[in-house]
Length: 233
Image (tube, rainbow, N blue to C red; front, side, top):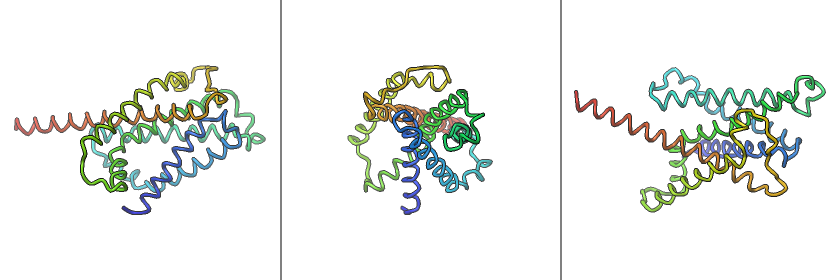
């Protein structure tokens, strides 16, 4: 496995960690939040540069559910990241002297809205690529043969995390944040810092699992349809 590819995965993982840290604004404070956000956007630029060939191949994307869904999710992620970047510039304390007239309460709401949508969309994005990620993990772990017990254990963990993610969605009020509704129900970091990140990871796991298994079901359904068509020809 190429070292450059591993490095890209490490940088992507670091970017995901920065996204989670960015969500914990009331724990980090503004300065750390802006530094984390700046580094996150630099890594996003690196990620897009490394995957620039994908954009050139969009027109040749297979016209089936997974291919079209992948394009739609990538486009949604791009729009959400642009909204996050645009609003972050407007509300930045470092640029407040220049752009203070534009960084009002509504812009901050949009910034929060975009941030939580990025969390959801990135999770779906990962779910679409989970077979590749698991393949890398198997190679790095030297796993060459399937094992029923290991597979069962991993699936149990995934289902457990997904169930936890449903609960976490209520604990963090994800519904209100994704719909830009006013709320004063923010996480109390004085009681628990780790709990916030556990809930965020659980929510990400929920969307990763839902996407992975939905795409697996779609692939099997498509294969079954193709087999049926060949039988009747």
